[in-house]
Length: 179
Image 1 (spheres, rainbow, N blue to C red):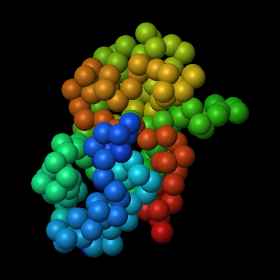
Image 2: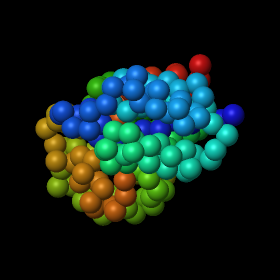
Image 3: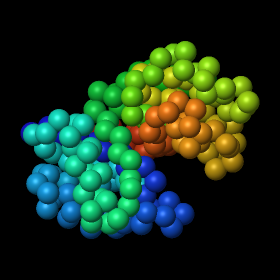
Image 4: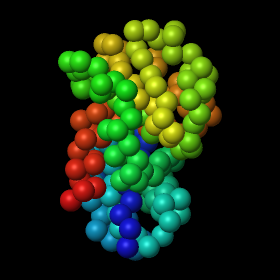
């Protein structure tokens, strides 16, 4: 059995794609996943399965549509991927960094460093971003709710599926993975 982390994009946000975590947990257990755990209401789900991550993500997406009627993109994240967040986040090296301003956009495919040019991040100054494989590290100057540099923008510019988590959530997801 392997533990998988599925990040569901856009559920329980501003009254859209509403689903109770207990109902989601039961649904996933009903299709054969083991040790299903959720974190927060925003779609962070740990499951144990013999299946490969890509198949797990597809099964989750398919079952959510069947049961809840929501088209929900799913990004699968490994423990190693979360560990890399801590090793490779350039903003953590800054003195006196306010981690409440740090976010990670997890994307559906590996990116190249050059893709940062495609994002045209300079038009969002003083917000900053850095690409590392399938992650975009973001430092918002004011806050995530006050910028246009969001998940929709990233998806449109890079033609990927993306879901963003704040640094506190990333930290807690790694702790749960390690339990």
